[in-house]
Image (cartoon, rainbow, N blue to C red; front, side, top):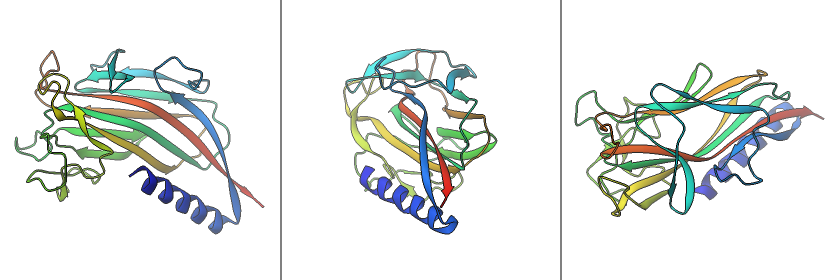
Length: 226
């Protein structure tokens, strides 16, 4: 999956530079792996917490990740950005335990939210029933928008074989990793990037379902005329 995404991004960059007769200049403006390592770069921005979300971490799959969260989200506030024409926004998104993305509760789908400023990149339902292939009866909208429920469980999943953390604690398939990577037209000197979820009936202890995020990177791309 990662190789496919990388090839798509290479082709996208080639296409945009061919059309403009230029070459891309990339600048990493925000990076956070939540490990406190030297790879952490936050000089252009910071994370704030929105609608019922507060800062916390936990160890998962051998890494420190930001979470677990229920209904809520984080906002990466960027400012004083270098001149650019595009963003590349990249992160790992984990769903934990029993996500109900197939509309079995009417309008109660569990949804990934990803916005850049006022533009919705993803508002997409995700299901996790512990199925680890794409031959399940369950469906979700991701990677499409929420009203499009034609995709199988595990569509565009990076790793379906992770253990659950509470409701399905220790059970393989109880958590799943999605690697999000999007090339987005953008040129403003500031930006708010929202990563969050609208999940139903998680409970105050978040045992039934939750989510977390890791390895956030934001790269600006400037097309330089030759």
